[in-house]
Image (cartoon, rainbow, N blue to C red; front, side):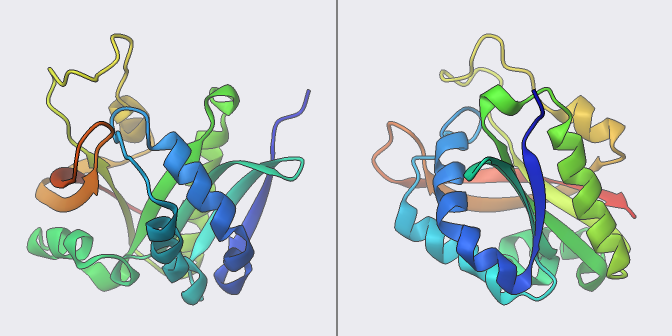
Length: 196
């Protein structure tokens, strides 16, 4: 059985995929460590910035017509100021840095190398556009978080093997509503970076 077909969507090509991407983000990010109690209206608004950026990229993984995974990327300056401020404060040139947004993949499709391909394609896209660095953010949760699954394994080793490293002191703060909570709370997100 072959795996999902990967499609590269750039700029305006992204718009038709946004509703499916919004639903996928809500589904995947509900799990630990994000625990995101998603809202489709918010998601649709958040994802619109990808369709408005002519340099933005979505790598979409389809099983037939069903979107089962996606990875996003765009210039860092097109994203929330919390992310660019964290890197600027660490001395990184935000105008030469590309930002990997989400990498979301339904569980049954994991372990097939798709995650590596997501990174390969985003890095190649950023490199072709002349960016010198690429980054992403990952939420930080306490080691003793009550909803942390017993078999949870962080992705730090995967990211390190791909050449990414934590940027010391580069933390962004972002708010969302956790599963089971009444309202939004701010969470720290660690910035990871690599040279291209």
